[in-house]
Image (cartoon, rainbow over all chains, first blue to last red; front, side, top):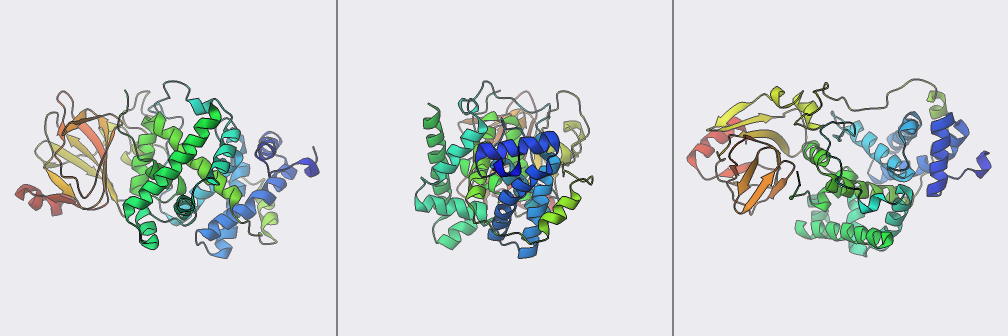
Length: 191
Length: 218
């Protein structure tokens, strides 16, 4: 496959590009992935108030980490955009804190496995992420606002409440409703 | 084991967004290890982040950036894996990431007595606006009745406790706030170990609590 036919702009295309990177350490594929995701990760870092050169650097580090961890990418566990988002988020947190972001260990013997296959495990993670991305467009403006402030501005619920001039409980309930709506849309798609 | 009391969706969203401070993140991540239901919700919250990153306005990279990364591709480098506590057998009681900050399983917890039947271990290296501690309440004992200046999330790790007409066992989370005054009582039979996160100091009504508070920073 040549660069011309690689496309990281669709979920399946990005998953294929990830596969080429993991299997063959394919640098052409990495370039395609970089061109799609690095400017988005940089945009995300800038929205979070990171200064320009650091935002660029964190975007570089994110894509470098994607290359190094490519073999861990598992399309049955996360879509490429979700996976890259989590790497970018963690690098940003780790850059500003003395301890890394606390996360569970998937290999931990203390981890409690699901009792049975959850309904939303039956569909491909890529399809699932696609449904979630379109569900975001169906939220009402008040819900979109708090979701964006939470993800893009690194603001705690109480700071969001202060800035919007609404009670803390309102921010929490808007987030909860937004989440419930996305979960419902996902559930409906699965039926 | 069947978890009855879960984290709120908005807390899982804040964890996915990276908005939670370090202390609260430890409590959330430790609960996720024990709770497949919340783990599925946390995955969904990550998908929201993934959807937003596709949607964000792309900002052109500096002209040298790709070249810089390309040069580093073949060099060995860190994958920033979290340090984990040494292997502790097949059946640890404390899940990760809690085990790593304790430095081992329950037998590695450095308890300090703070009252009759109650011990705690603080984690002072963890920054944030909130703080976390492990608490051990002897079977059948209770903590002093208290109120809250802020939010309190308490997750059970061993044993269990009753609070009013509700019961909490391994993995369950009790959520209390400014409006809650309570006195959890450990169930009989086994000491109750909990991980507690507070965003502000507790409010005690009893003279012992008031005297002990500044010493134990509770």
